[in-house]
Image 1 (tube, helix red, strand yellow):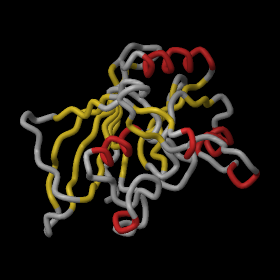
Image 2 (cartoon, one colour):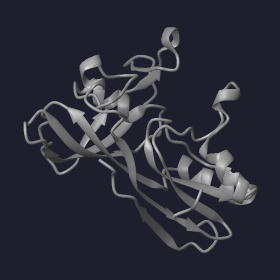
Image 3 (cartoon, helix red, strand yellow):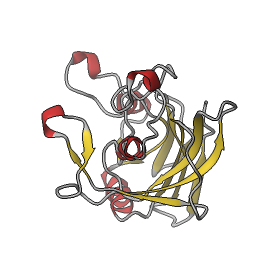
Length: 210
């Protein structure tokens, strides 16, 4: 795969929807972003992931030393990630420019790998969001999302909990909302971080393909 950005420390790619970030279980799940990248960049290592159905920006480290630095930056929330999503229904704008979804998430053990909101056992999960606009019929809303925490499926679970599941979401949306798009309409469009070697601020953007 051709990177959007490459230097001796890191790589940035625009992952397509439908491609795994890392290998899964089974011979049929070995094709993934990391495997494709390592053909050209053998030292490339994963530092974060996107769901298979989610498209957009992913950064990879070149070598274990840089991987440790970048992994720590993600863990300490020093990396800003923003997403674009199309959701079902007419979502009302928050009182301020950015609204907050503060709902704890945990694994839905009987239905793994699904996640659920659980106020007693869930881990703190925080998402910032803002309204970008509505579809011509008013039945679809375009939003920008910023996950402050990084729980698996966080954005998908939080939007469903609001009553506005993401279009094309085969895991969390009802069948009629799944049928509104041929893919999950969730795209990681913006990524901002500090270069792990030079300390330079870096910002990358990839417009949503929907």
